[in-house]
Length: 289
Ligand code: G3P
Ligand code: CA
Image 1: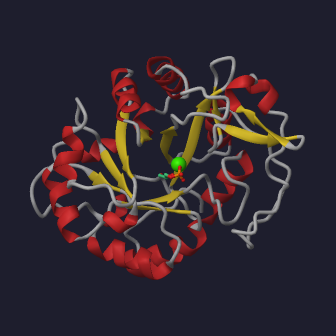
Image 2 (image 1 turned 135 degrees about the vertical axis):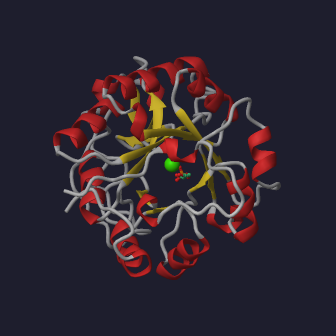
């Protein structure tokens, strides 16, 4: 087994212009696992992403009714013909709900399989039990749900996520990411490395983005349309890793790798692994052989 060598700590102190991290550190990030291949944000999806070549797993988090972080993208999920707020049921209830069998026409190559909504702790231990040790990009979502809730208190949410990561012994392998600066401040106070996500069209450069936070993040996760050579140079001056999302076209993956990004977040880790092999050669590591 190849051990993934990327670590969020690599960003610290690397602030000089022109710094370019060794290719072995480049992260192939499986978005929601391998969203284009397997049901997203599910245990089989995460294991499938690693088998396809990912060395980092991205996942989305909400708090269930009992305060347990659960892994799903939306604040509500379909059940029996209607949508149910994630925060209205405990994690054990969600662990019995199948979200994997439905066909998604946006991803014709995805294989539907029965798979339920896991807790964060379940995902971390299932991957650990598989013998693999990837990096983690853990996205804390703060979205209002249809019932009008604005989401959990940031401090409560951050404490729950950091607690699970710490119990799993994965603080050194994890970056908590979010579009929400309040959540990032909270999770930073709980001792996790942070990464600020940027929507397409977000104005300003890396300096301005960092200035919105009261601490120095480890990474920026811009939409790929925001990334060019100047953005990367400015991020290097700030000592930040740059890991754009969500890149599914091989030509675009190649262009970004040649620009010098620190990782690529993709729904198709299988396609990305081929591009990484071609562009980086031996200079990157899978975690699954
Ligand atoms: O990693 C960033 C990316 O996941 C943000 O978009 O909507 O897929 O969570 P979304
Ligand atoms: Ca996400």
